[in-house]
Length: 98
Image 1 (cartoon, helix red, strand yellow):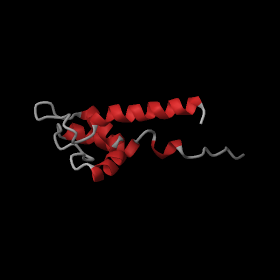
Image 2: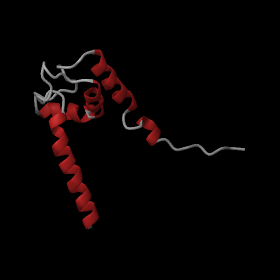
Image 3: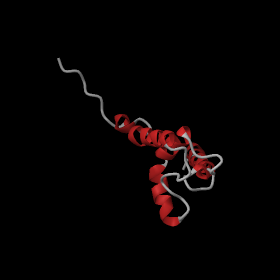
Image 4: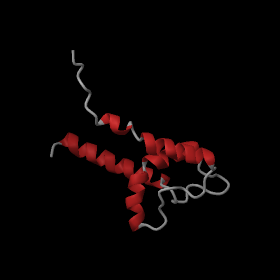
């Protein structure tokens, strides 16, 4: 394994470790400071990871129960539907036929 791949893997693992504190149900949100729109977007993006992680840790959820309501729901929905570009990143562009 070359050095560039090793550094990339280590950086990815570090990012996952740091961002794991932002998972739904991790205790980040409180009744005084509930999860809002941008937190909903983040939780929508990491929902597939949290679904698997929740199997091993009962406190981790896919959806934050302590949230601001409609705005959190809207952000979560936007992220679930859109993702990081959705399927459009994986679709091949069709060549124009004349």
